[in-house]
Image (cartoon, rainbow, N blue to C red; front, top):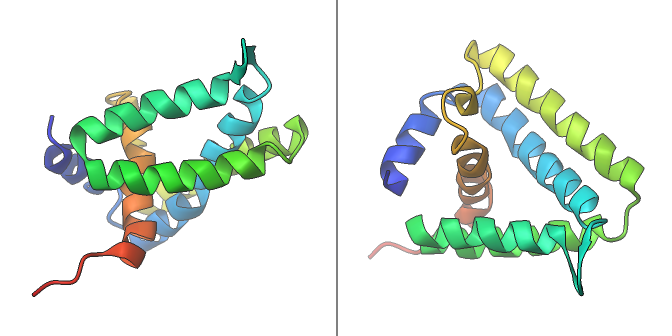
Length: 142
């Protein structure tokens, strides 16, 4: 599927303003939690958080280079924070992020999109990072 198709489908489950706000907080918290927990697993000289981030960014770049760059910046910031907090804080961020997600979908009256297709576990961060942080670097129109 193209970025446009994925984003259109994802957006159809996230049109309610309160749901989008919940996702704007929840998704970065989930990513922070995952990074913090997976950073504890070493694979030689690198940790699993880096491996997972590179894999996600490679997928993002295959469908949306601009979104991949935005996600790289956000992933880097979250990773740096994740390295400085303990596993308990990482776990708390992960759980709190999912609470935000579930509350948001309660507002929306829909189930999370990833229940239909697991690819939306990857699309969610790309979509939210572009929506929230992409506005900062939005290209000017002529």
